[in-house]
Length: 258
Image: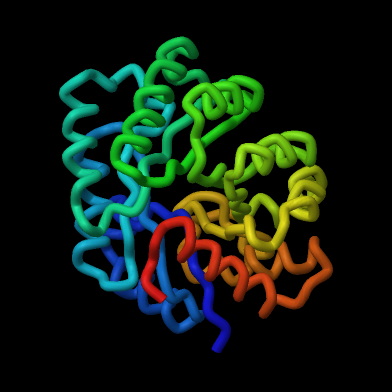
């Protein structure tokens, strides 16, 4: 069986409380050998939920941080609590953190302040950073440069080739979600064609962004196979090759066991 890694999902969230075990079993049957579980919201509780899954399931690993939507909630106490979580053995990255200028749920200046704080925390913890960026490419890249980030991934990539080049120039990985399978996402697929195979990741971002032809409804980690298939088609490469490289890249970036 071909192996895959879902490099970003939110299966600690309440959407999976009724059938989490079945969701994980479907992922494993589909060939998913590891899952990177990120907190979906802006509270300490959501981080604990992600970490609880990672500490219970041998093939799951946690990412801790606060989404930019909730940057206005971040104070010194919350930042210190996240800092403590980075010391837990099952935590493999800091995030998702970044900038979201599409919804502006938090003021942009506060998003930037918190983003810098989490980039500094990732450096302090010697962990890679998982970056969220939407309609904020210039500001995101400027912050990454200023903080001299050397290890990380721009997850759920939504930009075109120009931004992909700039992210790659920073030394970061680029991760593609179900968006890469959407008919309207030509720019995202063009960006994928620029990404070297040794910097490519795939993810579901579950429960969001179910890939075509299953678009709509709750997404789940088993569908990372469909994401990888869509990326393989965009690159004109065999699915097995995309799977092999994205598994190896996930292991390298996050320090996952072989």
